[in-house]
Image (tube, rainbow, N blue to C red; front, top):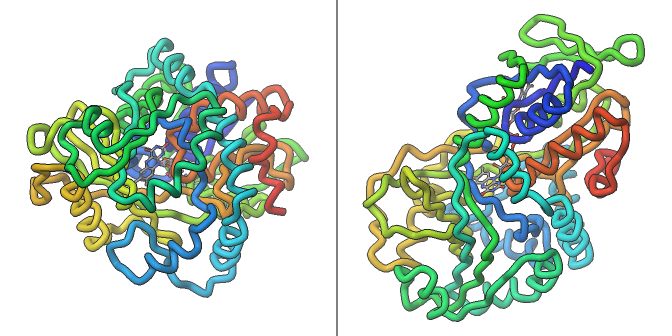
Length: 412
Ligand SMILES: Cc1cc2nc3c(=O)[nH]c(=O)nc-3n(C[C@H](O)[C@H](O)[C@H](O)COP(=O)(O)OP(=O)(O)OC[C@H]3O[C@@H](n4cnc5c(N)ncnc54)[C@H](O)[C@@H]3O)c2cc1C
């Protein structure tokens, strides 16, 4: 079977890898530089037990408070564009306890087995930097800590070991934390990777499996004879038996070419790297919970990542938000120099959906067109299982039960 995957981010590459591994003749079409964008510039966390979507109880009030500050971790771009307003309204409707609980359940099921999948990738020769030191969430305030405590049992039911710690317990894990840190939550099984090494490892392995790469924007598409899908890429027509749209925030426009409706909008985030030696060595990945800032200790230095800007259209960097990310660690760590030299900050556009769930499955407007996108804050974490299940769907024609909550048809 000839399959074209549109998108060479972690979702497109992982899907191409699984399709090619099962014998499909795969071509990946991608728009621009393979080493930029969300899949390279993320925090690198593999956190299957951290399955909460963005919409949740209390989020609306929090957003309204944060909208007043240019340095807040979450920002909603004001716009009267109907599609964007519909997206925000859908998100508003998903901010309730029942929807949140169901979304966590569905995501936990999709995330199950992701750590084993990453190990299987490594065993199959995909080379990437991975660390298995757990995840520590740290809290300065009782308020922020109390807000997450209630959800931990659902995550434990998913099979995750979660230790609730007081400030001293958190300092036992990371001694450099300040005395002001009052609480910690430790997820022992969580891991982290250097995201660029994952992209590079997948590129190398898929090429070895015979996957072809074509640079160019998909500008048009049509279906011929009921089954052959024709894409126009950089002015040339390319045909295949099936197409997988895994184009991140570009997926909304591509689905429209096939008559599909995907309310995907961008949630921009930033990251910046400090070289080793400039900052205290920290081992697990650490979430500074009030600041919503992630710290990832890597072989080549320490990565800081954060911010969710809804409705951003480009990857331009906002200096105010990067300053806010850099100002967060000194509130939690002793001896953290906020002015230590860091790399030029980069931005990535997370593909977000109104209900906070990915979109994975067949486009109802055409049986040979599939979608794998909308993974929001968990694209790296969910990539391996997304790829396995979608490859099964494309090649076997079945719909795996685990994918039911993620069907594109829910937006019809
Ligand atoms: C700051 C930040 C931190 C994050 N931290 C984490 C984390 O710790 N853990 C985690 O699991 N996730 C994290 N994420 C989320 C994760 O990075 C994303 O969910 C994931 O990278 C999305 O991957 P993707 O392949 O869907 O999209 P992308 O990486 O955006 O790739 C899209 C691809 O589609 C191509 N494309 C688009 N339109 C077209 C077109 N018309 N024609 C041809 N090609 C096209 C692009 O060229 C690109 O190759 C983070 C994201 C950010 C921004």
